[in-house]
Image (tube, rainbow, N blue to C red):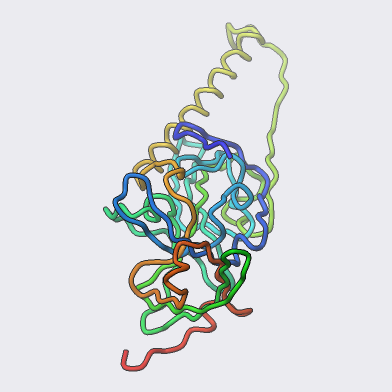
Length: 283
């Protein structure tokens, strides 16, 4: 898909519904990152191809205004600012909810590993617990299964969707429409007769002023949202790597080493990852 630029603000006024596999399947991929001297493997929720899993125009540097969280996502962090005395604007990042596991915003870090740059959401097993999962991998047309474990030192990474909206944008607040509901965009208008004594502006002039104010307001929102999201994390294109996967301390997998460069789809058991955690001895 064509990536939106950092100055892009795209409308997302209906709830985007990704395929269920995008928020249920784990993928492990061993890959290299551009400009890197080595290769990496890390774990991600959903496949590396974001075209089906994320709204049209999504990029690490894009945001949606006005916007709603996709189905299966919830607002992980948000701030509200006053645009003027009557309008408030909320700027938020939506992260996936996988079973009982809610992904949260990744803490600010100077780490330059690829998943830190591109995926702003993460799930981390609770301390003193180990998450057990199984996955499949294939090579030369042959499919096999294996298993892995992850303790509180490991992470599952996920892409976030960044949105902005104003208090006048939706009939239902975007914060309450994050999973499977949608909020309709509403607008109001009022027609009045010209009153020369009350204003020196004709209807056409008033309309011109109104359009100018509206465009100015949109530009203000665009600048505000861009500045907000630019401060929180780097804005880079996702083209530098292929795939998402598993890595970082605390993650162990029994994938044969000779298959390390292959894409592997990981699936948690029918219950959620959190419900299959096993308490570790001595911790």
